[in-house]
Image (cartoon, rainbow, N blue to C red; front, side, top):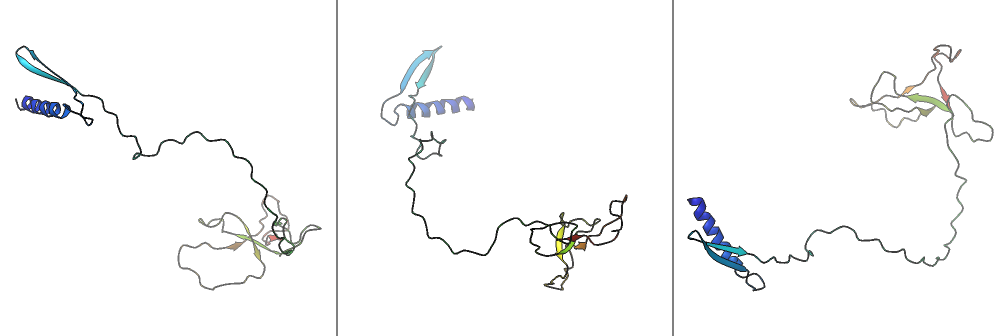
Amino acid sequence: MQAISGLLLALAIISAAAATNEGGSPSLITEEKVNGTLVRSVYLQILRGRDGRDGLPGRDGVKGERGDKGEKGETGARGDTGPKSGGVVYTHWGRKSCPTGVELLYEGIAGGGHYSHTGGGANYVCLPKVPQYMSAHVPSTYYALMYGTEYQNVNGIFPGKHDHNVPCA
């Protein structure tokens, strides 16, 4: 019974509110008796929504045509000539010198992480023969050590070089 009275109350509110819309024009309301019961039908007029200016931005529009090419600007002042530079710098692993026509920057020894330690670097580094220590402080935890690299005579690959340092230039 409460559900029916709630439904009738809601219908009465809707019919009163729908009698006129925002523009002041009435909606269509009809009343008729069905089996001795008054039935009121309310047909609401469909109202246009807002224009969307306060909504989220929509999809991008069609891209326009490319504009005309601009004029070329004036050439700027030429800068000072710097030292000779450029070219390729590479490491020559396993050698103490460079090929003919190539400038030697420094000669060193290959170094890297210990083969059984985890967490260090993956690549070898060409270390100088006389290092310059910036600090003698050794951190207590979470650090990787750098080891020199040596040849191992495995299956005769490096005969006569067993336990010798690997040079680099």
